Length: 385
Image 1 (cartoon, helix red, strand yellow):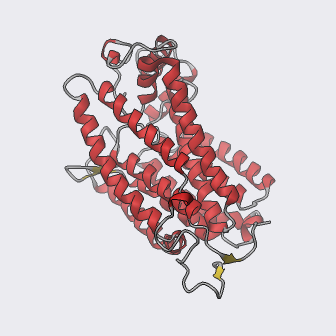
Image 2 (cartoon, rainbow, N blue to C red):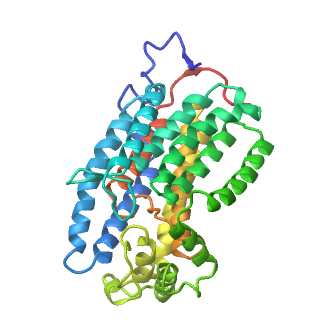
Image 3 (cartoon, rainbow, N blue to C red):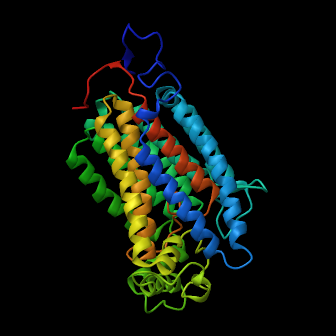
């Protein structure tokens, strides 16, 4: 069941924000400003991290990805999010087809996670992130069944299927990113706390089971390297230790732009993607590391503020899901760089190099701006309780 519009409204898309357009006063400019600052810093440090002769090439490609992402952002923020949510089952089915399709592609870096389109490598798991948020909102809105323990089965299955396919690629990092999204949206929909606690216990048991069943040897070694870094310092723990050294060596003011090529991260692979935080910390020091952290925190907080002031339940769920996604992904990326979490291939939202990641983040930003700016007048209860 979807919310119904008042008789005073000629159509569902006629919102206070003015149809498909957005009034400037209804746009969350702080949210946009934080995202723009993160993107700018990202391109700046991508150019440095990629090395002499290649840096501005990577930065140029990131600028092309940015143009593609901005186009997706404009399309999403101008559409009616309720209409997008109604089409969530079709989007979900399409996402699953793409996730299964990558198993027939050529492996890249030992994983089948991308479609090589020559000019662009499309990663379906990134596109599945906003799609899963819309799908969960589509299922949870106005339903009561998930408040029973057995009623959690359907939303968990909806999440488990794409997560299992992503894990099979294998891509443990993206799977980890989706976990806080599921919990945050169920919590926002007023699922029972003891049900969620039971899910945590079951999840912990599931991790133990994964260790003996589906986890690859290199994934096990990454966890062991995280627990015993000195034992694996010349193998699986090398990235983790080099990243920590780089972050510490930056001091308060940093070594300066371009000094990564002479620093601790000289031979570290993927430093312009998964370890961009270490690059920024070495070159910009504590000041830049703190700035990135504050911008990411402000982004998540602004998203939660949008959720708190949104009286339309589907929009509230979408805002919570996007905030949990961007905030959780940032925490995992920084946790890996600082050695607080095992090494996983998780990018920093808006900052790390990667077309699919940047486009996915901008789609999520478009959903947030959409929900915050279009306060649709609806007949319906304000809370789930």
